[in-house]
Length: 410
Image (cartoon, rainbow, N blue to C red; front, side, top):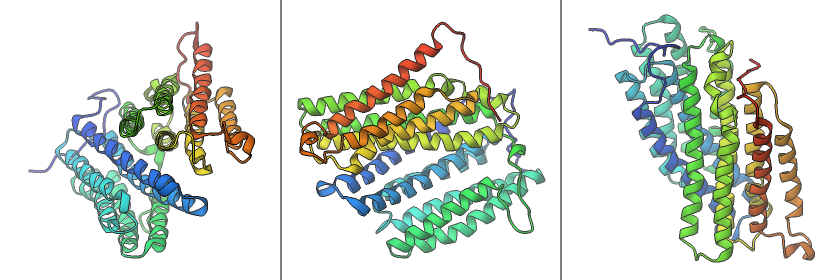
C-alpha cells in the first residue's frame, strides 16, 4: 500500500490553525532564545563587560547561532504551511526538528568550543532530513524536483557545517557563516542546482493564513523570552528601587512591542498574504521582516538583563546598542512589515528610530558632567517612552476610522 501524499494545504478548506505538535515545537524556541540571550549577556557583562572588537565578534558569533536556529524554525514552518501537518510524515519532520533544535539550543553556550560538533550535527540532520523525507513520500514531480534541489543544497552545505565543527574557532565561524550564506542565497534564487534548474517562488503553494499565524506565534515566543529573561534577572538579585525600575521598564517595553506589532499589520498579516498576487512572495518577505523584529526583541531582552545587573554603572557602547539599538531594530523591522501589509510606512516609525539613535551618544558618559545621569537605567527608561510615542501615534491615527484593510504592494 502506498503512503498517501501529504497534499498542499488548501486555501479554502482544512484547518488554518497551528497543530499541537507545531506549538510543542515552538516551546523549544522559548528555551533556545534564552540560551541565545545568555550567550550575548556573557559577551557583554562577564567580568565587568568586554569592550571593543571582542564584544563585536562575540555578538557576531551569537547572531550566527541565532540565524541557524531561525533557519530550522522557518524551514519547518514553511513545510507545515505547504503540506498537511496532520500527515504522519509531516509530524515526523516536526519532531525531528524539535529534537534537533533542542540539541542546538543546549549546545549554544559553547558552540564555538566543546559543543560545536553537536550543534552542527543537529542542524545538518534537521535540514537534510526534511527534504529527504518529503522526496520519498511526495508523488507529484514538481514537488519532488524542488525537494531534490533542497536536499542537494543542504548536503553540500552540511559538509561545511561538519567540517567547521572540527576546526578551531575562527575557521569554524568562517565555514558556518559561508554555509548559512549559501543556504540563504539558494532559497532566494529558487534552490538552483546545475542540471536541475531552479524553482520559481511565485509558484510555491502555501497556506497563507497558516504561515502568517506561525510568524505571529514566533513573535509571541520572542516576547515571552523577554519577559522570562527580565523576570529571572529581577528575582535573582536584590530588589532595590533601581532594579525594580529596570524590571518595570522591561515589562512596559514588552507590552509596547506587542501593541505596536498588532496595530494593525500584525493582526491582519494572514489577510495580506491571501490578498497578494503571489502569496509565497509576501510570505518570504514577512520571514525576513519577522527575523529583524525578533532580533530587536532579543537584543532588548539582553539589554534589560544588563541593566538589572548594573543599573547605575558600566554604561558601555555595547550595552547601549542592546538597550536602545534593540528597539530601533524592532521599529525598522516593523516599518518594513507595515509596508508589506499596507504599502506605506507611518512617519512615527522613522522619527522614533532617529530619536533612539540620537539618544545613544547623549547617554554615553564621555564627560564628567553627563556621567551622573548617563546610566544604563536612564537608557532603559528612555526606550519605552519612545515606544510609547509610537503606540500613541498609532492609536490616534486609527481612532474614529474603520479598520484599515490590507493592501500589499506585491
